[in-house]
Amino acid sequence: MKKTIALAVAALVLAVTTGWQWQRMDRQTKVAAAAAAKPSVAVDLPVPHHVIKGLDGKEYVIGGTRDKPLLINFWASWCGPCHEEVPALKHVYKRYKDHFDLYAVNVTKGDSIKDVNAFVQGHDLPFPVLLDTSGEAANDFRILFVPTSFLVDKHGRLVEIVHVLAPDELEAKIKKLIDASPAS
Image (cartoon, rainbow, N blue to C red; front, side, top):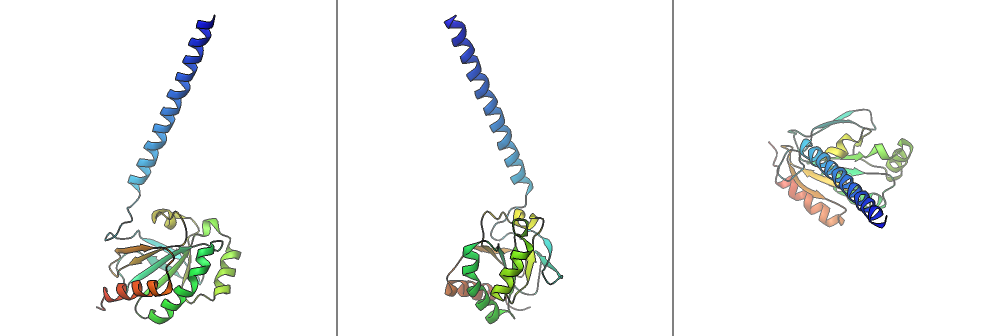
């Protein structure tokens, strides 16, 4: 009797372990397949192409060749560091807006439009605010946390990924981006 119970327990443990391994392997296969299917976001490669509607109703193009470099900033209204970085973003935009574009892409899928409007009005943002309502841009750019910013040259290639920076560091990076993208 004890031998039968021991065999039954061993068989059960083996079945559970095998099932868990199969499930784990299946999940890993799905994750690997999804990662392979997504375009890579890496320095010196073109950034993913998206057309995203702004709060102003206009459509903005991310990716591809443009007349000046671009800073793409992914943010959310509930994000403390996103609030903290606004003064630095406003400063560099006001100072260098003739030489680079700045698109503030709200990860709207996890944010309410009421909160987005309150953030934009509360900070008096001078640059275009885009609404990633589907979450596709955030997914393609592999946004794991906000804020995350992408410095993109005028050829649409990623130069650098940055997070919250001190104002002088952000300004230095913007100046370097502009200097590396002379006017045509």
